[in-house]
Length: 166
Image (tube, rainbow, N blue to C red; front, top):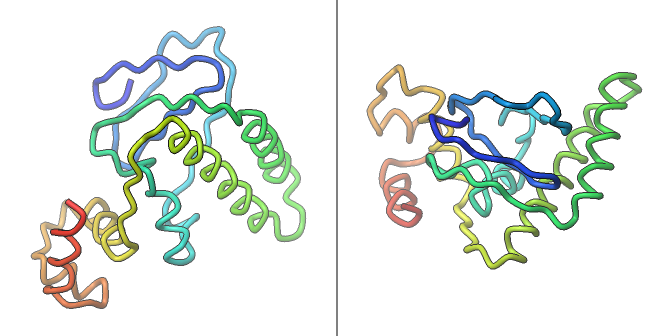
């Protein structure tokens, strides 16, 4: 269940959930699989990282969650097993390898979407940062000028990006 919508997952399928979405598993007694949870702060070290996680709408779907069949599931399975081992043993610089493996997983999911003919939505990093700031600061009810200041840009540039990408 994601935001009161029931979605059914089958073998070799992926579901992405954006921060702030209410979700839980039901009827999973015989289910097997992985749940990979990471925050934007953990993953996004630069604009390329931000763009990667949001391209093709993986985590920016605005209540349009979808189940994504992944033909390259073996690659994802292998990376998830390596992540599990890295986190369990925590060798030197393990977080660097975990980040790299998450990136490989996201690339594979993006490829699956492109191969099935999905539209590619490629917003810029500035717009994506604005969306994330809006999500994480919703309770503060900041004026738009405050978001522009927090992003280190002008209100005009923020408006331009919003018009371009929405």
